[in-house]
View 1: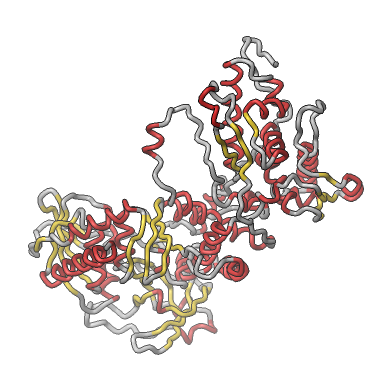
View 2: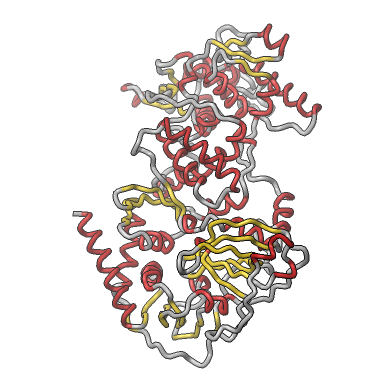
Length: 639
C-alpha cells in the first residue's frame, strides 16, 4: 500500500487512467456484478493504494475515490449502477456494495456526419442539451436533505453525451455567442400543447411563457405543474382588473424603446464582432486527457474495423492545427492516447485498459488506426432514440429561425432531412424558444444593412397585396406589439449606384397626417420578401428619428389604452415604444396607443401580477372574458 509522508494513504495515479481501468474491469465482467472489494483488487491503481480494504480507513478512502471516478464516467454518459445484496445490513459501509456497468437495453443510433455538419450539429446539441437540463425536475429539496459531502452520481447517463462518440469534433466547434446568449436567457422549459401537438418551449420567466401561450390560441401548458400554477395565477389576477382612470397627469415621461439603429452599437455589428473575437470562444468541451481518451475509446469502439488516419483523429479530438508543427504535436498526443488505451498492467492479476486490439503494423507503416475486439463498449456509442428526437427538433428549429447565418440554416435543413429518417413519426418533441419564431427571415439582412450603413434593394408587399421594389437606407428595427418593423429612409438618390437609381422613391411631398416629408417608410419586416445589401456610392446622411415618431408612420389609427401597475420601474414597460408613463400611487400609469386589441389583451394578462387596472372599458371587458375563458378551458381539461 502506498503511503504518503504524513502516513495517510495516497491514491496512486501514475498514468492518469484509473477511470479507464475501472471501465475496463466492469465491462470485462459484464453482466456480472462486482463488489467494492473485487473492484479494489482488480483495478491496479486502487490495489496499490487500498489493498484488500482491510480496515475502515481504507474502505472510506476507496469509497470516496471510487465515487469521484464514477461521477466522472457518468458525466461522459457512462453510468455505473449499484445494488446492495441481502446481507448488506450486516456489512460495514461500502464493503459489500455491488456495481455493474449500465449498458442499457435500448439500441443506440450511429450516424456519419460530414465536416460541414459540425457547426450546425454543435449548435443543435447545445440547444437540445439546454432543453433537456432545464426540463429536469427540481432537485433542490433532495439536495437539502442530502449531506453536503454526499457524491451526486446520476444513475442514468446525461442525455446526448453519446453524440461525442460518433461526432467527436463537436468539442472543438465554436458556438456563436449570440446563440448562447439567446438560449441561456431562456432558463426554463415547459411542455405546451398547441392544437394537439406537444412542444417543448424554452422561456425566460412566467410572464414570458404566459405571453407565448396567449399568442397561440388553443395552447395549454401541460407541465411542469409550477408553470401551470403560475399561468393560472395570472389569469385569476387579470379577471379582477379594475377600470383605470384614463386622465393624463401634467408630468409624464416617454418610453424610449430599444431599437437597432445606425447610432447604436449592437451585438453582431463589425465593432462588436471584433471585440467578441478577442474573447475566448463558446465552444463547450471538457478538454482533460481522461475525457479525450474516453471519447476516443467510444469512437473506436463504435467503428470497429474502420480505418482512420492519425491526423484525422487529431483534428477530430484535439482541433484544427495552426501549422504542420502543431499537427505533429497533436498526432503525437493521439498516439500516446492509443498506447494508453491498449496498455495492460504488468501484474497479471490486475486488469488494464485494453479495450481493443490495434493493427500495429498498419499504424507503424502508414499512420492508420484500425481497432478490433472491443469489450462491448460499442453498446454505449451513438445516440439514444429519445435524444435523437430532441436533437432532430433542435436542428429543425435552427433551420427555420434567425439564430444561425443563412448558410448554416441551409445546412441545418439538409441535416434535418437526414436525421428525420431515424425518428419515429409523431415522436419528435418539437421545440420553440419564446419570441424567436416571430422574427422574420429578412431580419438578418436588414440588420446587416443597418450595421454596415449600406443601402437595401428590397421587394415587398404593399397594403394592396402588390409586390413593389425600392432602394432604401434602413435606419432602425424596432418591435411594436410583438411585430418587427423596419424604418427606412427613402431619399437616397445621391448614394444610389447608377444601375439602381430606377428603384429610388422620388416622393418628397408633405404627409398631411403628420406634416412630415414622405422620405420615411415604416413597414413590417414580414412584408419584405427579398432583400439585398447594396454598397452606396457615398455616405448616406440619415436623419435620426425617434421610435415614438416612427410609430405614427406604421398605422393611421389605434385605440388609446391605459394600465396601472403596483410598482414603479417595471422592466416590461420599457418594451412599449411611444408609451408615456406617470407616477400613480406606489406604481405607474402607462398611456399608449394600441393597434392590435388582441395583443394588448395577451400583454395585460401575461403581466397581470403587476397590473391592477386597465382602460378603456371595452378592452377591460375583453381581458376579463379571455382570462375567464382560459380558466374554464383549463378546468375542463383537468377533469
